[in-house]
Image 1 (cartoon, rainbow, N blue to C red):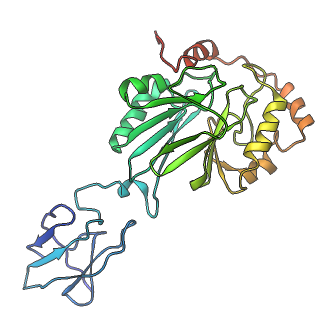
Image 2 (spheres, helix red, strand yellow):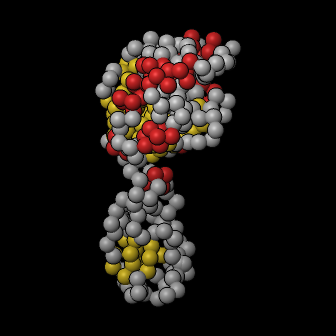
Image 3 (cartoon, one colour):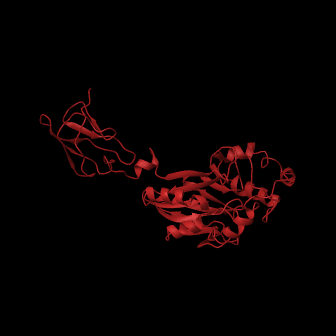
Length: 317
């Protein structure tokens, strides 16, 4: 069947639409059934549509659109979430420090959180939040970073309603200090805080149980882990944290690290338990591996640590 298309503009969603020329049909939005008097809105991710009866006369038609259907020329949040997605997730990279920043949001309430923002890329992050019409509720750090300056302080200047978050034992300033088991709510979702020290005393993992995701900071990297030779690091503590907190999550949970240096973006609990060349070993072997790394002194530590203890608010000059 040849589908005629509509050239005329569309009124706002939920109103009636007058079509003057049936020369083409709106892509994604309208499907003409076998009978010319039946019109059906294309099924979108949020609603089940019922056929809407209309009466056609030669070259005109009156069509009623379901209010949940995406309007022509009008973007709705369902456009940005993807098919069958009720959440927003973005993974962003800082090419200088290889830091991942994560944006999570509820497209219904528009509340969002940002995990491990980087000072030099605040403009990018804030623009993304604004372009998606989100309300950034929390700017979160997994720990006091030594390889980059956090963007939480600058984000708070630009988005005053946003609150900074870090663990209570980190020693850093923040609006919200979390404890083991704390919940950070955003819209219909929440992140659970698991303390996972060892890389630093204040390290934690944020678990998004509803979506089977965990944001591990430097505790678990993809086929690696954070170093333990400075900043309160302790290999035995890190091993226990990972095995009792992170590796006890369901095996199919996705693990998103704070960094990756080889271009990988995500791993799973099952993968790291069996394939991580450090953490899959015995505790004694792990401690020896970490002691023998002989890693260089972090390039940005002298600049980053003082700034991050103050939530990234400092004189950058």
